[in-house]
Image: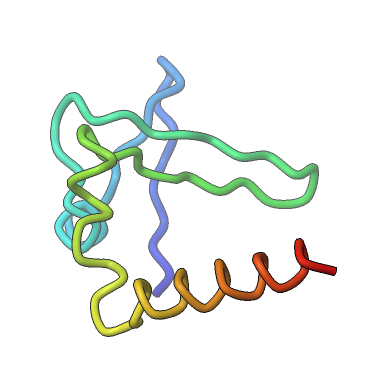
Amino acid sequence: MQTTTTITKRWQTVIPSTIRKRHQINEGDALVWLDDGQTIRLIPVPADPLRALRGRGKGERLTEKLLLARAKDREREKR
């Protein structure tokens, strides 16, 4: 998706409503600007980062993966 906005004389711009709605950006939310010298990325920062991550690992069998990794660590420590 490509959208164009304009910079005002006070150096402000508008986040298009389609992007605000898709990424749930609301009044008062923080945005991080990342500049790598060639591109600029704008990253919304959730008000409650832990709540935003809730449910992201669903179906990933994370407990099983953690237990397997711990078992491997114990095996390495025995050597």
